[in-house]
Length: 111
Length: 114
Image 1 (cartoon, rainbow over the protein chains, first blue to last red):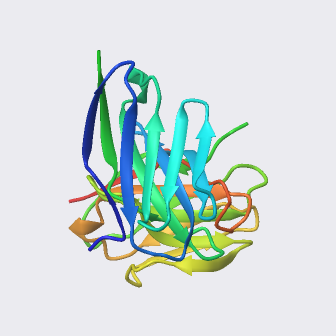
Image 2 (cartoon, chains in turn green, yellow):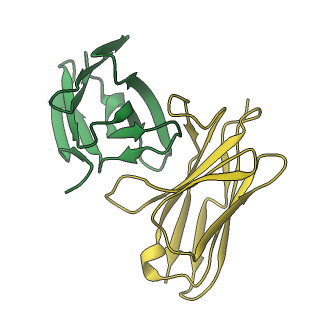
């Protein structure tokens, strides 16, 4: 199976919260990342969390890490139409920045 | 400040040809990484260079090669192109090569092999 798994689609109403989930298999993962990719664009790093943390908050974004279950989530509060994009979860093991990406979750925000 | 710049933005090549993709990192960044993103998939790591030395290589055939120049810009070369090489090729630059480094991605080069 894949090293990093994500559901492919999520549809939410504008103003609601979005929760994008990710599971990974490598228990020695040290960093876990969330990237955003808008159509025709490269990847934008939204946030990352070190494996000894269980939560990180940055404005509308909240990352939760359950290391025991190897589960990572990204919550976007007050989701806006501009948040529509593909969100990638990635994990990194070891000292070098060589992340393994999931297939991405396409977030669709409708009015 | 200029972000990561990649050239060209789009490219069409024929099977069997060779292609060179270019990347200029953010000023002051010494690490450049290359990724292949096939439609509908996440990016797959190809190479990482730091201070002109290869620091990591993904599971890609020897047809793929790269190098980093003294000014930290980088080239990705692909020989004997196959239809399956059609993808978005992304370059990322970062100050260092470690796991906690923040990597900035370019817009990518869309390669189509026909």
